[in-house]
Length: 383
Ligand code: ACO
Image (cartoon, rainbow, N blue to C red):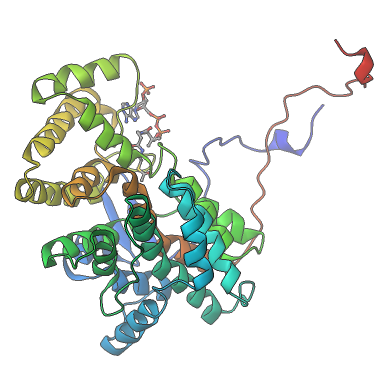
């Protein structure tokens, strides 16, 4: 039986489908280029801050000094949670995976927002700021609680990276650590229509709200084929007993057709420019913090992968060296993906706002391969 789908092209991973126009990020996967609103990622990593990068992604231009000051002040005014949300955070089981906790808490931010369904540019920015600002407080305080520590309110005189590390560790971080995290947040802020951003757009496409869209994105990012890979990289590095066995470990994995986490990308077939930057970072942080062996093992894995599967376009992705970087910063492994989410809130919100301004319900089709005209069998007669 033929229907309209027989005239359509099957594109299971949507690799060959363009779902709209965007001014947010440009990726040239063959050349290893990434730009946010036309500015090269390396330039942003060197000169910008996470807050300024958010402004760029949400307004399609860099802010003036006074605009940036006002934007930062708006963000800081939303760091703290309402009493209801602090109470809710107290109730989350301490064994909960942090990404499940975060997904629930992002959705719960809607409880306090009477304008949750108001779709004006100003209201959308305000919602995006609330999620961006509250996420570090939520992640850090969940971690404090599960370590048996009291909750700690955010310091509104600090930027996002500093305030997060301050709450997490109970003391203000050194400048180098705070800047390292700030740069990581810049590097992870947006990346075209990746799986979690697509999830955001599917939700926004139904005219649902920003909180629903970004909580769906958190759930999507969690998967090991996407943002969850950074935690898998760290577990792999811990599983390898020492530098001598790196080669056999990787070769066995490849022979068994197991994917090596932190390698490969749907779009990049050249090296991921974020990985190049993070590699330099991982190297200096690892040597400063006594994690040199971890970096050396990572470099060895990269060499073995290059020699064996580099010709297939399999190179390190953003998750590979971010694992060593976060570990050297003293962050718990299961916070790596939540920190990715903390940054990607910027891109998710940017695409949500862009889509809402030029919306079309996303509703693909599948090719039906089941039976037709099947007969009904009463439950008592089924075997
Ligand atoms: N290790 C070993 N081989 C790999 C890897 C890897 N990490 N990634 C891809 N390959 C091989 C595949 O086995 C396949 O080989 P074959 O043609 O001989 O069968 C070929 O490369 C193509 O792989 P696909 O899985 O079809 O490529 P796809 O574009 O669907 O996958 C993906 C991209 C999912 C990222 C994949 O590379 C992967 O699973 N990587 C590991 C997980 C990971 O690091 N994810 C994070 C991505 S970045 C991000 O989302 C933030």
